[in-house]
Length: 130
Image (cartoon, rainbow, N blue to C red):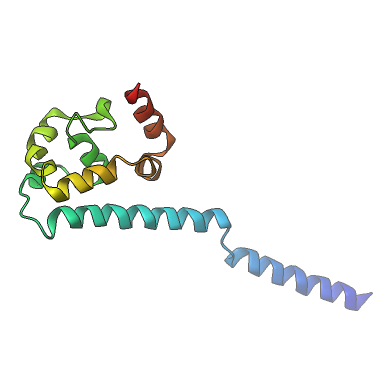
């Protein structure tokens, strides 16, 4: 009986140690989602700046996706309620370039809404189409 009690205590300590160091699946999925957002956001910024001579981006507060959504032209803006006329005016020439139209198309995709702004942005985009 004493041996069983000792084995139980050892197993209990091992389980406690494992649980303290173990990450849950939700934590790992959240981390992967965060890294995915950062990768895509940084890639979009790189594409807009690295191989181009676009000076219009200097007038934006940031190159984060939420600001780029606000600057998309009204005819291709999937979230027209969030549009900012000043940013749209500043970026008008940039969106008419090949790389600008590519980035605008990427930002208008459904997965872009889900990744950067959740289902709220997706619902808003669907309502804007109607």
